[in-house]
Length: 356
Ligand SMILES: O=C(O)C(=O)C[C@]1(C(=O)O)C=C[C@@H](O)C=C1
Image (cartoon, rainbow, N blue to C red; front, side, top):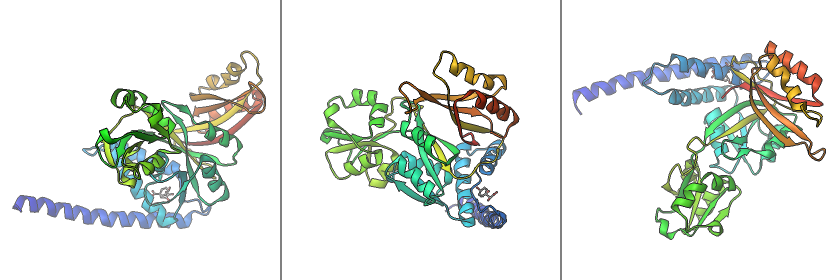
């Protein structure tokens, strides 16, 4: 080893020792904060969002903001776990995008609980078996996830966060000999997200060779047991099931993103950059929805999502899922919601939470 290399490594060792000391000091401070939390609620997404926002503003590089967020999410994850371990339920099995979303938000120092269905995620959090749940709510290509919307209507749980996850699809198999592949497993959503790619690259594997699986991770598990099968799934699923990657980023839309919600039992304080999710319904008459939404415009409350869904109480009656900018404690939001409540036949606020 040259003297110069040794010198640089010595410097890294010194910095690592310093980082080690600082991480432990930070963990001790978090433990002290934990003991002062009389409510017993350890996870504070508003505070975590503020910390990450500040770090992004202070970051002078060369490390990219995205990497800084990952690193500090892990640091906060381990500090949080030393205050109290938390369990996060998600739509399993292992290797799904939901698992990836849960780890992206909470870091790796958590206990994860893989659930068989979105219903089970809600049940686990409602029963207290998990502190939080992560459920998909919409995909930029495929649209809304109806089951999550229906369950939000019924649940006493509170929405306490959102996660935006870029969805990259991979073709994987036991080997990379595509000529030996005679079937592909995947979730129907992923098949549609990769429709063009499949048409262009594997036209001989038509509909009959495409087999629907309950999840991408199940698809990867099935491909791991059959050398003539491939799966479309996440990179994480390939790692979990030990599969080789045959093609990467095969989604038709490179901006393909799924938005997930974090559900829990606590109201989240304002972070300064928040969103509020709610559902409303109104009489089925011309102009009713326009009239209903007028208070939002009047009090300067922006709307980032409006989605209708059959109400299931009458034919051609709808409820409207709305995301508005701001926290339900912000004055303009309070006033707008008061007005909206007067006009709506039904209104339920799911929660306010930091913007992803
Ligand atoms: O500030 C707090 O309330 C803490 O518990 C500390 C901390 C952190 O590591 O910074 C950990 C967990 C919370 O979710 C928020 C922040």
